[in-house]
Length: 178
Image 1 (cartoon, rainbow, N blue to C red):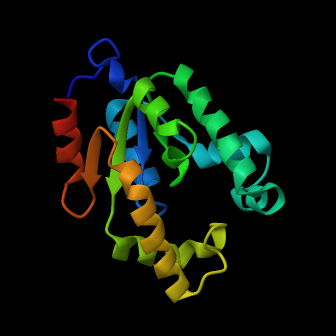
Image 2 (image 1 turned 60 degrees about the horizontal axis):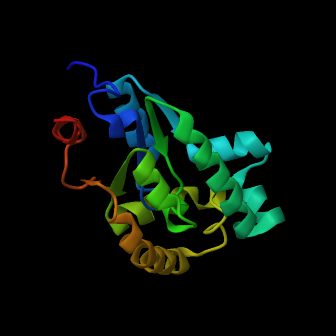
């Protein structure tokens, strides 16, 4: 495969992966960046680097509103970067005008993963996620159902949807690049 350059597809200078927590944005982001010869950036890791705090601590000490402000600021810093794949947090596109800005600055891909898979993944890692760390299994399932229903209307505004239970990643990447 020949390298896709910014001149070939300007919207591919920056690719933003969105979707619910546990949907596979980081895993897919790394693979996609590698395939394109791009840099991969995890927005949550960038927030932790910028603040020298873990996401859980930001939520605990400053609250979600302040976290979303920091998240927006870190997201905006990616707009000057090229050849980058950004794995966004699950709520990133749902606050402020983040979704519109990401679409104006690059290509947005919704990583759509079945709720059952997300539930299985989050059960194992809930201690590291501030919004779900105190939920039991029933509460976690209800949270996932509610939040996906709430956020789906924003997620589907993405230019592309990658369905993890239907699409083979390599084939899907080739289709998008054509």
